[in-house]
View (cartoon, rainbow, N blue to C red):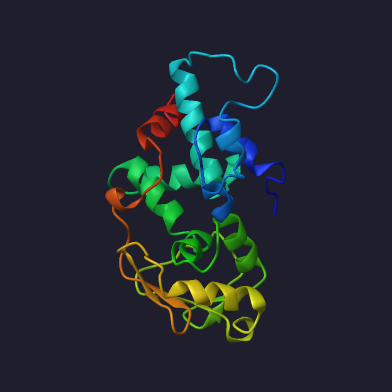
Length: 208
């Protein structure tokens, strides 16, 4: 599966804000954005006034980078969201939040979405007792996501387990720290999706 393999912190600098793509490093003094909070490249420090199209494009790129999705897949999500009842932009964000790799991250079973995607691809999680290795798998209400029994003894998951007791998860999820599992109680509302995205700009971009 195609994926972005370049410098992750460069993406934050390009968007002009922290996207928290590298977990704990984003909160430390080692975060490159804290030292160089301007766009990368020779003319990165030049102030540029974006056009209406530029603002819409940047918002779409920001959403793609936060969730780690390439253009083709992101457009597919938008088309599905547009066919659903309700507000297209909110439908889009809810679909992105329902991705298995995102849910794993939200439950605190991975440090960031990139790590969550890798762990899912390597088959470390089950959904309703069945192993699922597709990061884009759409969870549903009532689904139970759990670390596979054979993975719980690995040093990585032992370290993750130590921090779960103090982990706060979104209200639409339910975490059971003892058995390293979580349940989808309901779908998130827009107010519960804490990503710095103005989804109406994405809708305007694809509606041009």
